[in-house]
Length: 275
Image (cartoon, rainbow, N blue to C red; front, side):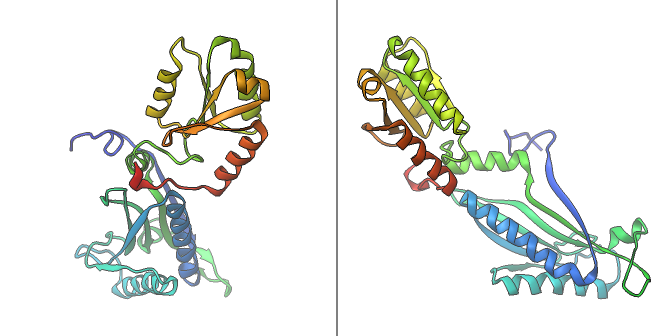
């Protein structure tokens, strides 16, 4: 098919995990995987739908194992209280699966996470473990991916937030703008104070008008813009604005650092309808 930015690339990286379990561990491990997926998607602010895909026509293995696997997946979904729909016949040839379809800011659906049960791979590779009765038995494989294609997930994130990443996720969290070159030393001092606290900060040192620098920072959707001039130097403060809001708020450097670190720790999300 045709390439499409990060959403359809020539090659991609996948967070594909294979968990080898005993039959008694299946439901606990699937529960853990689904809880991880739910947590990650909540952090990013995604809504999602769940599909339970059942045995296809070209399935491999014994029917009793398929019934057992499908029942295990359904038991977990019911226990967690996650709403889901049955996707008849869309499972992999080696086992049933749970697919997660996330919705972006404009409600487009993207299939990303998946949890799949596999009774066939252990047979093909003759995998065994010793059980409590000192007998050789087959393990079960759980295929698990949270993001699916990392590249595609990044593309979905960019479009979901419209490039306006939440503070904790933004590549550049703060942009420093000196009113003129005479404020260079103070700009450097503020930059070092922010970097010391692990805050990702940039400096606009171009020979441009102040308004142009502020506008460019807004277009880059940098969460916080700090303007530093004579008044800020005299009071050892910073004038703060966000790219979404007009006007400046003056505060002490330490106060700003404390505020931004708290916001980062809380992983607050922007209100997407305001983009």
